[in-house]
Length: 244
View 1 (cartoon, helix red, strand yellow):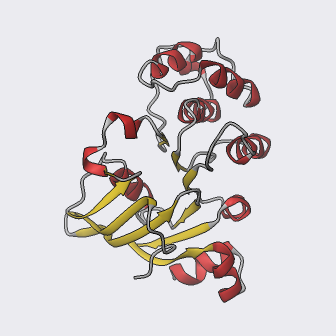
View 2 (cartoon, rainbow, N blue to C red; view 1 turned 45 degrees about the vertical axis):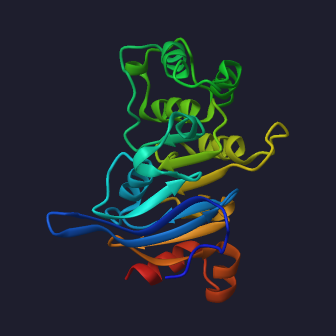
């Protein structure tokens, strides 16, 4: 299986990652090599293994076999320094409903040495998220905004986003994409992003690479420009062709 891109040093690397539940393969021999600065779109139907792959990469789920590294550190033994360089938004959000938004931000920020409180406030303003609101009273879309703020406030070098804009309206999605990919003169190097989404038109605009998963296996991977040139198809059409 070919890698995303030949690279001596990768932000994310997996080798033959395999995980089975009750005899069913959630992941089967997944091997990837993600170069620093890549924006990778993880594409696949529900149950294809996208969320499972992200959780294995983050060390939240241990595979049956194979290995993975993030920023040179093994996923199963991420040290505090490496964790501090990673941002993650899960599908469930994992929020504390009894806190107010500003309290939630302050609490999470206490775990990150590089947390930028002012950056968190600016992100809330950009996403029209009220900091005095109680988390339990937030709409599903605003809860997703809060999860995004917490993933971005420490300016991570590596960002994992699992359906991050599924509950946002079109205007909020557009603003989020601007926040995520607008040029930041304070960064020494571009951020590496792994982004899982079923909104393929949104993905097509921002990704540099694509990984297409089907029943736990990588069916297609590569630089998006090269895949377009090879297949002459939009991402949605390519997804349908490979997933059937």
